[in-house]
Length: 117
Image (cartoon, rainbow, N blue to C red):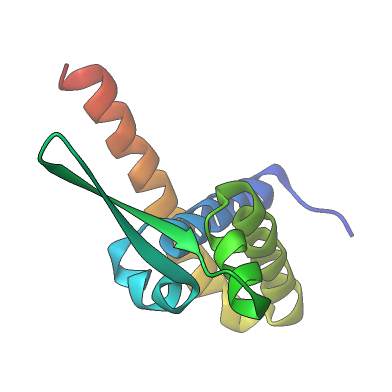
């Protein structure tokens, strides 16, 4: 199983973007919601909202997984690579879209950090 550097880069960017979608992005909030409890704490008149994984069972396991960027990244990477090898024709477009979105998000981070300061 040989893989080119370009393929590795595309798979990596796609995995990065899928992980961000699952862990942070608002569009996938509905997926995370069943696995977390909302905790509100008030300090000096300001309310902070925290999301903590459910306390027991499979919801706790998935909640802890989704609250860990590194953990979710491993599973997202496994999914992307498996998808690439099992369905190469079908997966190519989806993986490329995720990779382009991942690169775009990294470029935006660069612009915000270095250009807009």
